Amino acid sequence: MEDGDRPFPLLRLPDNPLQRIVLLMGRFEQFALSLVSNRSKELVKSIDLSSPINITVDEEEVSISIHKRMYVNIRCSFADDQVAIDNLPSEMVKPTVTSTRGRHSFTRSRKGYRFDDWLSHCLEVFHQSEKMPSTHRRYVENPPFLHNPDYAYIDGGYDVRRADGATASIRFDNFVYFMFIVLN
Amino acid sequence: MSVEPEVPIVQVEEVRENPVLYKIISSDNHVFTISEHAVKLSKTLWDLITNLGLTAENALDNPIPVENVNGKNMETIVQFCERHKYDEEEPEYTNYIREFVLPEWDRQLLSIDNEELFQLILATNYLDIQKLMDYCCRVIGDMAKDKTPEELRIIYGIPTDAEDDALERSASDSPGPSG
Image 1 (cartoon, rainbow over the protein chains, first blue to last red):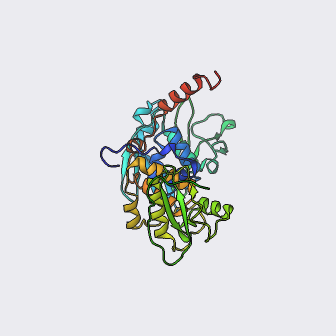
Image 2: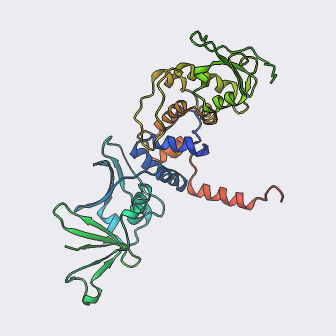
Image 3: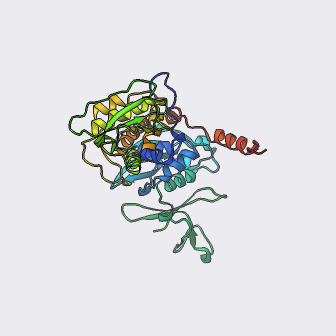
């Protein structure tokens, strides 16, 4: 946009050019656009992008990685405490969103978004919600955190698999907000 | 069809290879001539020509009025179509990102301000010119390159959720046409 030029009224365009414009953008720009407003998010969803999504848990951060073909294309990195602290105000949940190819990044919060909202956003925009079911039940052998073996299962959440095969599940609820359980 | 032009005819390019020419009148009564090969790039115009039964003999005597496109945009469109009339046909539109490069001539043609670009893409959509649509979309999409959400909000004039909600509320509160 030139100095003094008025904004380009993108959302006033008919559907056909509007969707083509978004389709011709890069993944990083498509994702950034999805974060501008609910309307822009619906626009990006409407072009049916599909990208596999992984969650990575390191010692100091949790990352949501969005892939393009075989490679990580975008990474949303959250400091450990932004994921783990109960009821952290959403303005304090500020992931750094990085384009791993172009090395561009921005750090921002989104009103009302905590980690699970960011994850849901990514899953929705890249049409992976159904591939990551949040309702399936997994049984845990000899759970260290439960006294009653009858309750030795986990419902919902998302599975995380490390390269050596160790599997864990991240679950969110209204009481403890965030629970990370290593299954095996 | 007898519409009298109020301004001189704009002859964009002399066409020697193909003698069949058509006349188009824009919404503000500018008259353009365009060759048959070029006008075929617009599905809307070509359908109109076919349906009106225009032929090489009667084409110039029957100008085609296009009420949704003004003279400025029509001039750009005619220039574009004449430039690209012998290009290979584009493959059918698919849902994949096409890695085409915008030629420099076309980038120059589309170096116009945002309001003009908006009007041009509306005209291109109405006239159904696939290649020009792709080129306009590429120019508009490139504005987003490496930008943050805050920058995109400014570049594309995207309202916040609160602004959208307020607009929706005021639209639903305001009386309809009968009330």
